[in-house]
Image (tube, rainbow, N blue to C red; front, side):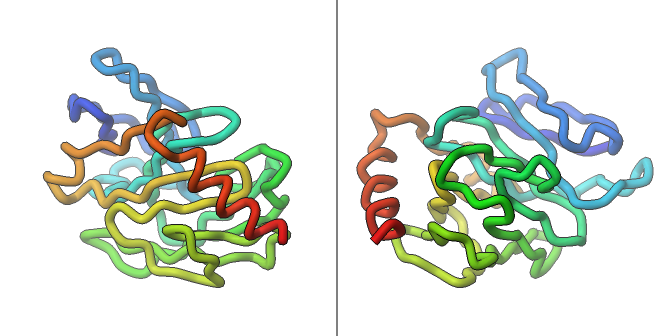
Length: 180
């Protein structure tokens, strides 16, 4: 079973065959999706999904928490065959990939796949970057925030989402730079 965390930290576990499905917390309404590029055997996902990206701005899915797990790279793009599909005009079909660097706590590196609009982390264009707690990642029309859920403090402090929290101006800056 896999522990799923959300904004209110209400405990919930789901089976390993639930990868890719969205779950809505009955307490706080947060949508959580488990993302993994491999099939997991029953019992093999326990403790694995301890890092997440939260969509804080984009054309859809704002507030969705995407828990990251598994060993193979997680492919990101607008193509439906990507492990993490972000379907928007400024997202390339094969935009980026997440590479697992370490376990317990999870460490992930994001790598640009020579996408048209690039990837920005904390408003700086990168070719690759090892994600740190609180990093803000810009992928096309989406803005996501990285969280390592192992940290009790991190799981209590959820990203604020939506344009009222300043994601729009930062996204516009990154998009203008990417389009130049």
